[in-house]
Length: 475
Image (tube, rainbow, N blue to C red):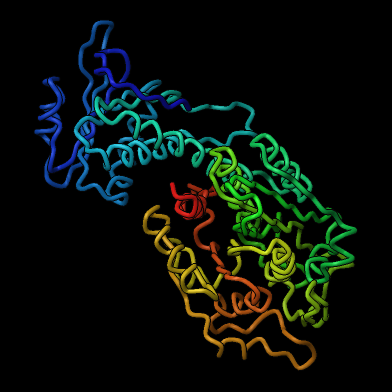
C-alpha cells in the first residue's frame, strides 16, 4: 500500500474522501462540501463514523466523516477501525486532516495508516486463488502541517512493514517455516535493510549451548542461532539494545506431549522470534539512530527417540545444571542460553519476547502481554511505551520467594516451578541467566495470535517494541 501527502485541497471525484475532525473542532468548520457538513451534523454523541455515496463528475464518489472523541491514541484507534472497514472497499482514499492540530494530525495519520494496513493485510500464500485487498493507495492532506504528517507516515510505513513481516512469519505453515527457513528470511530481510547477519548452526549449538541443544536434538530439523546487528548510533561502539526472541517453529511438547486439540496453533510458538525479527527489520529500514542486536534461538520441539526425557539433567551455556521435569517447558531452555549469549555484546538492556506460558493467558487473558523485569527503570520505560502505542502490557512481580519453586534435589535448577504463579516462575528461571545486565521479559502467549474464525498472528508486540526503540532513539 502506498501512502503520500499533499497540501492541496482534495479533488471531488478523484478518490473516496475521508474527512477527520474532533468533537472540539468539527469538520463543518473546515469543509465547504455540503455532504461533509451534513454527515458530521447527523452523527450522534456516540457515533464516530458516517459515510455516503454522492454524484460526481464521472458517476459516484464515496465521502465519509470520522469524528474523534479526543486526541488520544486509544480513541483514535477505536475510531480508525470503522474508517478502515469502509476504506478497504475503495481502490484509493484521500484523507483530509485539516481540522486537526500540529500534534493530532501526524498521530492520526499514523493510526489511520496502520488501521488501513491491517484491514488490507492478507495471508493467502498457500491459496490457489489469491484475493488481494482492493485498497492500494492513500493520500493524506494537511494544508499547514504536511511535513509533520509526512514524517509520521514514513515511520509508520516501517512499523507496518515490521508488523506484516511478523504476521507472515507466524502464519506460515510449520512444514515451511522451519528453523532454517526462519534464519534465511531473517538474513534476507536484514541484508536488504543494510544490517549485519551472523547465523550459527548445529555444531556451535551442540558444543556450547546445552540447554538449547536439549530441545533441538529431538527433531530432524537443524537448529539455528540467528544474530542480527544494526549500528545506527553516532557511536557504533555504544552499548546496544539486545532483543531476544523465542523461535520454537513447532511445539509438540516433546515427550511431555501436548493434547491434540488446537495443536496446529503451536506453529505460533515462534511469534517471539517473529516479533523481534519484525521490529529489528523496521528499525533498520527506518535507519533509527540506535545500536540494536537481535538474537533468535530457533528449533522444533519434537518427541523423537533422541528427545530429552523428564528427569534429564543438562548443562546450560553459563554452566548452570538444569533438571528437566517437563519437556513442554522448552522455551525457557532455549532462551536461557540465548540470554547468556547476549552478554557478549555488553548490552545496555536486554529484552526477551516469548510465547512462554499458558499461565499468562489465565492471568491476563488476551488483552495484555505480561512484563517482568530485574530493573524497574526498564520496566517503567516499556510500560510507558505500551501505553503510548496502545499495545498493552502489565507488570507482574518477580520477588525472590518465587525462586524457591525452582529448587531441584539433583541440579542447580529445575525447569518448572509447579502450577502456582507459572508465568512468574518461568521468568524467575530466565532471570537467573540475566543477572549481569538490565533485563525485561515479555510473555506474549495471550497476545501473539488469535484463534477461531479470526485465527492468525496479531503482530504484537511489535508496536510496543517499536515505540520503545523510537523513544530510545529520540524520535
